[in-house]
Length: 174
Image (cartoon, rainbow, N blue to C red; front, side):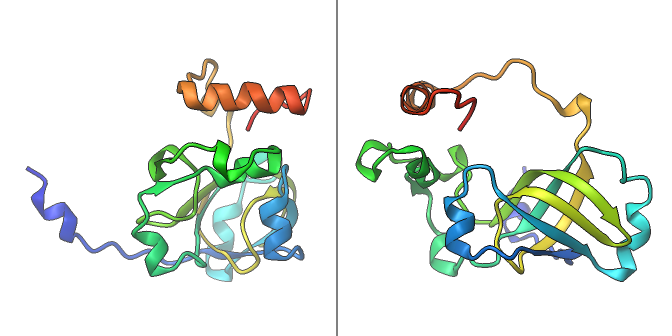
């Protein structure tokens, strides 16, 4: 029925770029993300009208440092859990679509960041989990209708979350 979809060519043009002062390793190690600036290119600046006043935005990015080899990766360990005290040996090998790993067939990133100010075409944000120079494909306001009230988790994730909470009391989420 959809056999032609595999050969469908999709072209996306960045609307902006992320600027962070933190190096890649600091971004990777950060639990709550890093501050930075999302620069929207001049031709898209009008699209920001009305954005000021939202507390958070959803950034859709292209994870530009993911190489061809990593795009073929389908099984991974959720490595970001290492910063919560887990060893790689403790982490399960799972499908890439059950993680937020940048190693995936289409390295698209989705991040919810705090919007602290809009200054022309520059958005000051907190909580970035992407590297300096990351292309921005789109952004959307985070609105109350996007909040999920009851979240289900697979057993492997729930058990890791429980273990992390024992180690770091007050941890609300991984």
